[in-house]
Each structure stands twice: as C-alpha cells, then as structure tokens.
Length: 271
Image 1 (cartoon, rainbow, N blue to C red):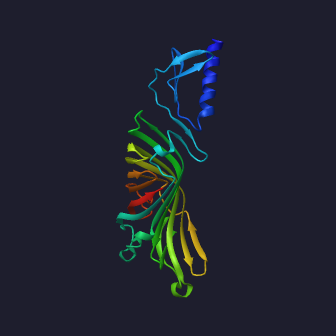
Image 2: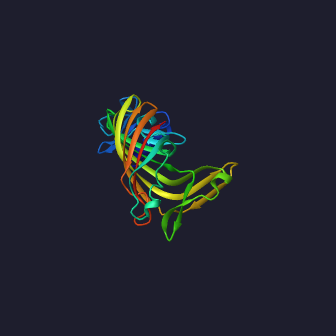
Image 3: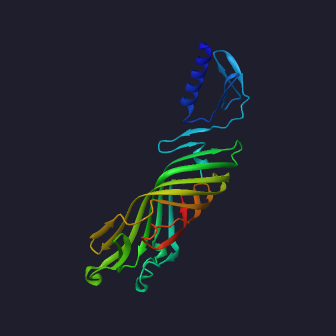
C-alpha cells in the first residue's frame, strides 16, 4: 500500500513540475496510475507502465491565464472591442416628445471586454471543445450631446443639458460595467480556423452617465435602473490570434417599468 501511494505521489509531482512546458494525460485505475506524455510509457521505481488511457486532460499554465489545453486552443480572446446598437426600443412609459432619447450614435457606442482567465476542454483530436472565461466588460452608449439621463421617482428620464453652447459639451454617454462570463462551443482548430457559438452572462456592477465638457470637466450620475443580469448569445469566427464576433442580447437593458424596453446587438473583433 505504501509503495502504491509513493508511486502516485511521484507521478503527480512529475506532472506538476512539467506542467509549464509539457502536455500530459493522467488516469487512475485498477492497474494504478497511468501517464501519457511525450513518450508512450513511464518508469516509476524500476517498473514500466504501459499507456492504456484514453482520457483527455492537457494542462497548461500561464502567468495571467489558465486553460486546460494550449492557450491557442481557446476561442475566447484576451481583449474584445465591439460596437453596440439597440433594437426594439419601446418608449411606452414616456410622453411622445421624450421618445427617441436612446437613438444612439452607433459607431461611437462601444463595447470593451477584457477576459483575464479562460478555461477549455476538447476531444482528443481537438476538433470539438468548450471554452469558458471570466473577465470585465464595459458597454458605452453614446447619447445626443445635448441630452443626458437621470432618475425621477425611480424612472429613467432624459433631460436637456443646461447651457450646452456656453459650457461646450464634448460628449454625453451612458455606461454599464459588469463581470463577464462567456461560454463557447468550438468547432475546428483556433490556431488555424475555428467557428464557435455560445452565450454569456453579465453581472452589472455599476451604471452611470457621463457628461464631458471642453476643458476636461465631467459630470456623472450613478446607479441607474439597469437589470443586474444581462444575458445573450454569440457566434464567432477565429483565425489564429484574431476573431470576429456577433452578439444578440434578448434580456432587457433596464428594469421593467423603470426604463424603455430595449435589446442589444453587437459586432466586434477580438485579439
């Protein structure tokens, strides 16, 4: 029994020591521990173990990311940049003269995501896999430079910025920051070409408006009535280190009865 535990300990120590620069498969069965690395067998204390395992667990460590599999075998990039557009906007809660305040300047309404961690698992041929990530996301919605948003009785309400011409408003926008959790099912080889589909869940941490004036002065208002959970679906094409993606977010941007009904479309690129 002691010899068996010693063999297990030595094999695990060997895998951990080599994990930064080697791939390994490790299974534990009735015949003891079985190891698959660059060679077909492993010798422990003079005994030869023949590889019979078909399990898959390629371990890879990186200073800022951890993945099961090579870093090149995840479709979730470190950085994403997208452009937002709102659809299905319903202003039923507002007076007719207030409608249209969420008509965005689309090419200046952006999405930025930074995925600090990614995790992946694939079949032995690495043709099909699943990848998951964890990061931060910021959605910026560019408003008309003469308008901003506030809360009145809990309702998201537009208002005209005072003295626009004399104060020199440079831009007005609405921002939502969230923890980003993406999941994608991958087909192909990301280090050459891959297609992936999946979804994401964003947990909103902060929302605020920002009015930026000429000269650098800023006005902000925080904690607008945004839904805490935002979820959507995504499709992506990956070419080595570069990807193109499209997202649709069917969940409502604002809480029911406290803002316009609106869904979001995003197209973007990843690195």
